[in-house]
Image (cartoon, rainbow, N blue to C red; front, side, top):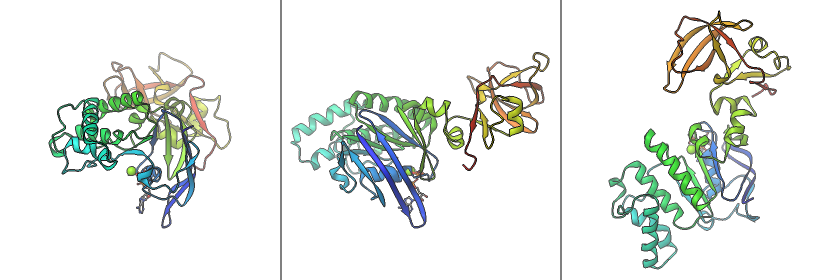
Length: 336
Ligand SMILES: Nc1ncnc2c1ncn2[C@@H]1O[C@H](COP(=O)(O)OP(=O)(O)OP(=O)(O)O)[C@@H](O)[C@H]1O
Ligand SMILES: [Mg+2]
């Protein structure tokens, strides 16, 4: 294990921003910190960067206690959401900044800057100032600046969220490919579940300062530990116990549990085609390209299902709903 956070806690006045966080990061791993606005993602990242001192807890890197080591001595690379380049410096000067601070020889810096600009696909743009670069290009330069000093850990705080959808998706792949090539362990904050699922080896799902679950994208999707994770990673339908008893009698008798089902697990059929399933009504449908999202109402409960894009469902149609055994989720902790 490369990095270990233990019992990290940080409050601002009465409000707890980061609450007793334990987390390990392995060599070469890409970890996404995913959670809603205000859940403490940036605070946790800033604690790791050395920009915020935690109230309690320790940070160990390869066994060395970093908790009180100042940011500039941690050797980490950092990229923030936007406007992180020095506006008065060219792209090349931005990329070379950390090397100049470390008093590397100018010729060596020039060569390295050129290598890095080529690596991020911007050879020849070194003379441009940030305001002459697109948002995506600026973030690539910020990334090059962060990796220029051979950081032992890369910290990225929503580096793609200010970009338009197409650039964002292209850069997800570029950042991930670059990270895999350089094998720099990376922690990236995002509130975008697609981004986290696409990029991360493991996702840390946070809520109100606490970690709800850590796991691979598939683990979080298939076996969410809490209703919060189920709702934040992918879409989900929560079911009343009465409806769960009809749709998923195999699990619905667990006392105190909450029940849920993913949209793609629900099967829709014409009422005359199937017997032994629940009757409902289609209340809305929405064409999403690859799939049709269909809202059905069953016993006054709205459920979202997905169907093939060419299926005939229209609002007002009667429908039969069923659920294959084993595809419902049950959460035992009702307090969350
Ligand atoms: N310097 C500060 N002073 C006071 N409160 C702060 C400070 N920084 C963060 N907080 C509070 O701590 C909580 C967590 O904030 P944080 O910025 O870590 O959230 P976040 O998950 O990064 O949210 P977002 O997705 O909106 O960036 C919030 O309630 C925030 O108001
Ligand atoms: Mg933030």
